[in-house]
Image (cartoon, rainbow, N blue to C red; front, side, top):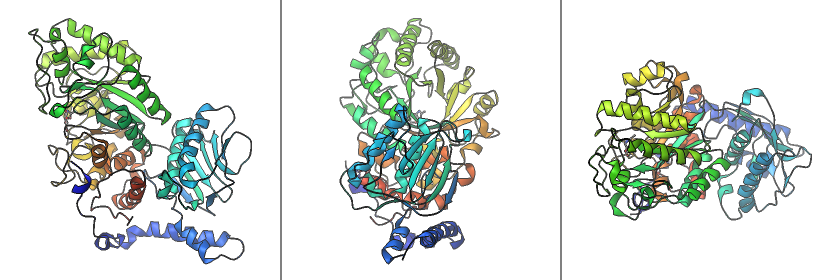
Length: 551
Ligand code: NGO
């Protein structure tokens, strides 16, 4: 099936034009653009030609990025990237140099410029600096742009990386293309100071219902990193497929990974594949959270090893989409040998802090068994030095100190979740009727599910994670994560059509301050991402709620 041919008609641009919104809402942006044009004119030396003012107008305003930055002060002339531009990095910082090389790698093909990376002193060009105010924290950055330079200052490499993502969005969308483009490559003058609201800003991909190759996974990591998402949760096991090699239980992958929904060939990641994903993500400041879903959602494991079943009989592999029918055998001791081995091997190849043990929809496990099992599974995670993450049903058992519960309900009112948050369990929010990326946008969306309703772009964006869980202060919220379940998805086009535009909104919910979350401002900034996605070959949903520019 090709998604492309099933797009709804493009929105009627006249009807959808910004003029639909009240003028007062558009004023800040209009004013900002006018100020930019005026300031460019005021500081221009010599006679300002018509071409100059045309260029000034074509500069992207500093506040026109996603996620919305904390503070933006437009001022002065734009910086023009040209044949004399160098990228300066501090001496002796491998990480800063890596960030600089990534930036050069992005800019060189489309600009056709040499853009050498150098650690020789100098203050012109694109300058990456390590340092700056303590308030920038581990992920924040400051971007200063003037006629002489664009300087990104951060205390850590993650901040430089995030600052570079902002810089990308301040350049024309064509900068994302792989072949030479005309330019000009101007960055509006002024200063952005920016830090994230939440530490955990995640995306999840279900590689179990349908398997996705390392290349497909990398492509998705690139896309999330552009929006400052810093956590990628891989749902590595489920009823339909076990996707990660485990040396001590080899049939999990070789047999349990040999099919998928609908009966395709499936697949699994070797340990080297997995390490490659971890490394690729780390280079983009993204931490991998591996999930082994237990005690339910385990048919692939139960099919691979008869001894894991209470009756000692292995069920057949499963290629349907029902949930809740499988369970590890809680009373058998071998179950905990299995859990220990799997957690040990997965933890050993995961440098990140977290290990997700699932715990959702254990409908074939008694409550007593569920609590007993989750106690032991959590202990195994602690034994191998990781922090437990579980779906929020974990709050109905006994979450260990420091555990993280991932909320996937639709109301934010479950008492167990509220009580656990009060007792110190941190929450990652993935409300299904807001940010489950596998929910259809509308009844006509050709892919996806609808058990949590239809989730159009505004529905996905227009809520505050800090105020979502009843009676719970925002300090209990570790962050947000957008899961993408793959019962109906099997290609990168499918992933992208469901993720975009909604993933950009989740990134903003995770990064931007509560006061900055505003649908009318957001939809305008989001619209500007459309041409960028097209340049990147991302097949996105052209929601009629967003005033996409003509391309
Ligand atoms: C539920 C279920 C998954 C499904 C998904 C589909 C959770 C945490 N468990 O979310 O198995 O794939 O819905 O939307």
